Length: 201
Image 1 (cartoon, rainbow, N blue to C red):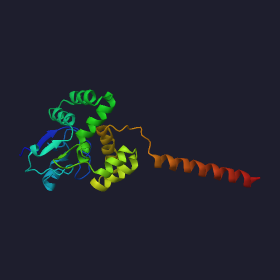
Image 2: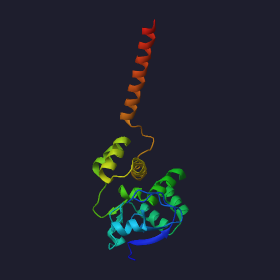
Image 3: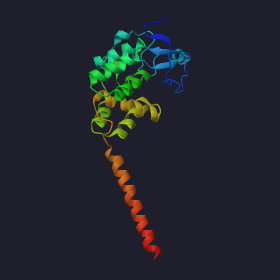
Image 4: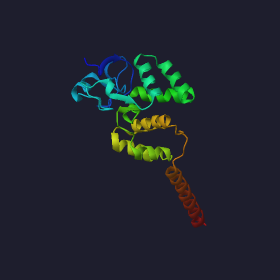
């Protein structure tokens, strides 16, 4: 077995290659670059990590965390110390424990890495995706993430939320397009109700 791949028994929700659930206690192949967990047979079939593209023959030294805090969190996760990883993230990113736990969970699933949390040298975060996030356009960011990485809507949403934490963008930033759509729907309902009441007379 190479440095790139190690077999572990952990509870992770979904294989990024086949998108099927990973059963608790099942032996899985884990990417040492981004911590994405795969079914062992999926890793063998694909020959690389489906989340970050690292190859079996590659070396973990080819990857460089974007952020030293994330690098330490990955190291703690690989050592099996999730609690220390959450505390380290919360302390160094100055966020509450719930936010830190959500970010560490996303990192453990490989979502953060697939979205740019740990990527090969010279692999910057997509500029359009980052612009959408910083402008508070979460829905557009999710759509852009899916264009770049594929996957389910749920996975894209989780990855974008993890990126929001990484970039320091608040989760509560409303998406202006969504708010405008909701206001438009409310106005349409009120107009229809007024028309119905007036025509009933």
